[in-house]
Amino acid sequence: MKQLIIFATGNKGKIREIRDIITDPNTEVLSMREAGVSADPDENGTSFEENALIKARAVYDLIRQKKEAGTLCFDTTDTQITVMSDDSGLVIDALGGEPGIYSARYLGYDTDYNYKMEQIMKRMENVPDKERTARFVAAVGAIFPDGSEHVVLGAMEGVIARGIYGQNGFGYDPFFYLPEYGKTSAEITEEEKNAISHRGKALRAMLAQFEAWQRSGEAAQKTAAACGDYK
Ligand code: IMP
Image (tube, rainbow, N blue to C red; front, side, top):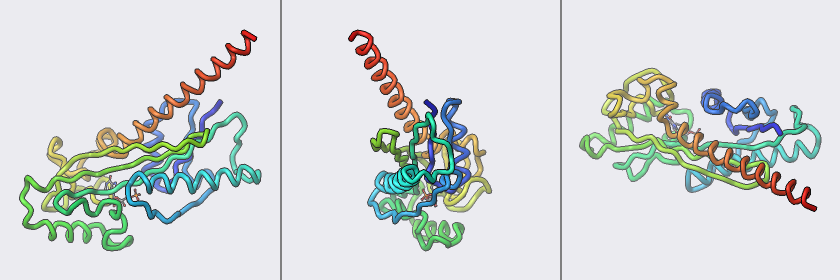
């Protein structure tokens, strides 16, 4: 049986990251767009985990409706479909966890990130170095082919810098300082970041759960076959 993972995102970077992590040739990854669906549900959960599952459920329902109507644009013969989604953000201790689940919306969706970072640094002007700890957090939610729901969290620890450095990455990377690298997460390479990132950790944990689920399914099938033989 082939495995198809539909990742509920339009972000090419996220799709590249998950494709890099999945090495099983039997598992294919499609973005929402490649799967011919588009969902933008209200992310009104109160945690990263809830928001990741809200997105995954919305895409899972669309895929199920299209499958029932026979309007899916890909072949599902001998294929099991899993939907995955992520929700992430920056959690700053000195700001009581802000911007947290509101990271993308903080000071407005379309506001330039240099401005967002400058405003945060202003709010933290008097926060001493030792208290500038923060983390990027990512939840990956998934609906497996049997309809079961799963969610895992990953985090990358760092410190809020007093300036903006580096061109790589996106969002809040240029002021997120990684003490073990002596650089911000916008100054390390994409490969380096994927190896330590919140999203990378959560994706790998979810894929491990998925592989365990597959193995338990195969084991159940073998047991059923054995019982059939016995009868
Ligand atoms: P979402 O998970 O796509 O909703 O994005 C959450 C927001 O958190 C992004 O728009 C960024 O502002 C921020 N964010 C999440 N992960 C990262 C990261 O790895 N680097 C920089 N900003 C991030």
